[in-house]
Image (tube, rainbow over all chains, first blue to last red; front, top):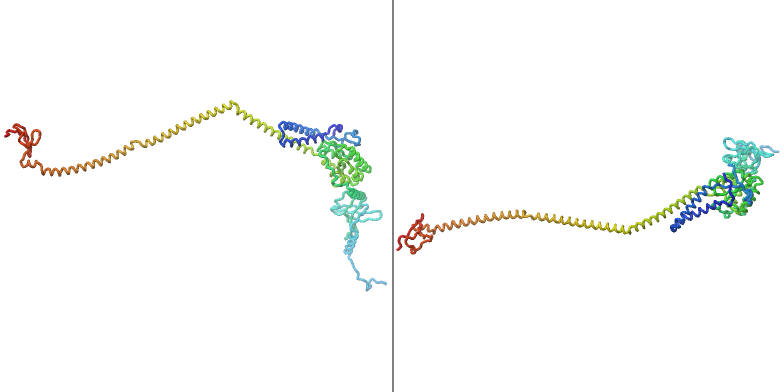
Length: 85
Length: 451
């Protein structure tokens, strides 16, 4: 069941996820290139693990947000949408 | 006046019912190959054979018709008396009974036919205008953030879509843009909502969808105004109308057509499960890389430490000590080795010496001595023998000249007291003791007178 969604601009979770995943992929590729210093590598690793947890969390906590919008010109009037199951 | 058997009349061509019926059937089929007939159904029957028999009628006439398997099973509706239908059929004759009948190849509800014709016309028109051009189809964003779903808020379609989205990709945000999806008010409402959604630019993608229904039910999605609104949308539009077999004009204009609402939802979003797997793999690679790097560094440090340790004074001392001990061991070893080799040499010499023991020589000498002794004795006895022989000869010779022989003849030999033979009488005063030797013995004499 969808929960009442927060205001639309508040949680750009997909964008967030997408950026995190892209960054993680680039980071792993860079590390695999093997041209990082030890410091950089350690930092990359920590950053990578952080991104991984972040993505995992995003997936774990995600709940489909569904709203009923009668008029796309008036998004503030959107109401929670409860679809009968 | 005519008589039936006029001699000049052509010979009568007499037919049997069979040949007549075959002839008529051929004529009918040639003259009317395929016809469309619209009328009302009655006397519908579908026996166990699966073939379908019915009568088509209008206010003034009726005609019998049959539809055979498998075509009869492809119908999209269940024919019933009173239905108004459009039939495509060959005109034929049922020879055994001589009955004129239609053999139907296709049958649809009469209104549907009109709709279909409209559909085909509009489709051709829009196609000619380039609305279906594959080149103008836009790709969908890889990660859709907000989807606008234009559909009925109460239909099965939105339920299916939301259930798939929830399962596959709950990160997405969905806005349901409610519209009526059938009826006369549907097309303008849908077109207006499409225009508004496009103008609001709130969504990454618009899903235009509704569940299955009859061709008439789906007609709103084949409306020209809707098609043009889809075409004009600034946002990619995914269309999913009805079931797999249903196509709407909106499907052709949309950037992507999905067979069903659920399928559309699957096309729109990635699969969180697959992404989780991908994430897991990335994290694993990350861990592995870091682990390898740390291992390499640790190993390098360990190695350097070991080299450093090797340079400590204690280590050098220990090394020297060890070297010393080794030399010591080698020295003793060398000594032992030398002693052993000397002992060996001594043993060898001793053996050689023993081989030279005098006992051996002594035996040899003794043998030689014995030999010499033997030859000496032999030699001696030879000599003795020879001497004895010589002696015997000499004795014989001597015998021949022996004074003793003279004595035998009566002579005597006189010796002085010194044993000398007395050859003169001079020097022997009286009283001188003499000795005379005779052949058979001696006499002591004394000189008594010497003139």
